[in-house]
Amino acid sequence: MIFEAVITTLDEDASPHIAPMGFHYEGPRVIIAPFRPCRTLSNLERTGEAVLNLTDNVAIIAGCLTGRRAWPTAPVASIQGCRLADTLAHIEVRALRVEPDELRPRFVCEVVHEQAHRAFQGFNRAQGAVIEAAILVSRLSRLPVAKVDAEIDYLRTAIDKTAGERERQAWAWLMERVQAFRRGRLGDVA
Image (tube, rainbow, N blue to C red; front, side, top):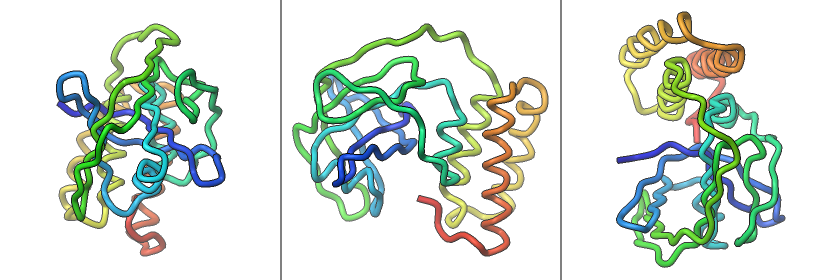
């Protein structure tokens, strides 16, 4: 099972890099497998540490995919890094080993600290729709236009029926990104 999170790593200048990414568990180990090339991968190769932010703020996910990466952060307990200030919980991990791959190396990580920050309030269909749309946006250059359009049309129903202001803003950012991509102003989304 793949879980969606927002991963924070540190760039070379110690500033936070914030990126949405899936991860999964293998027993007690956390597996992070970023595609090449990306800064999260470079940062993990250099430091071996990351923070998995478990957030219900889908605007952060949509924001990161549309060039909005300046989100408030807070210190963490056990590694060099930071967490999102607006997160339900965070998990600090350290890589035990890397399984090389030309496209998608796997970082097998141990959990060194985890902490809850606030209670989960429940599911909202619009949040799920934004996450699915964000995944589409991250793959615009690899998916057929008809598939993207069909999925966006389907997901829009959840936005129309159940979105709050945060989800509507996130959706708007993603739809702007789709339109800009189609006008040829943007290349691959990473």
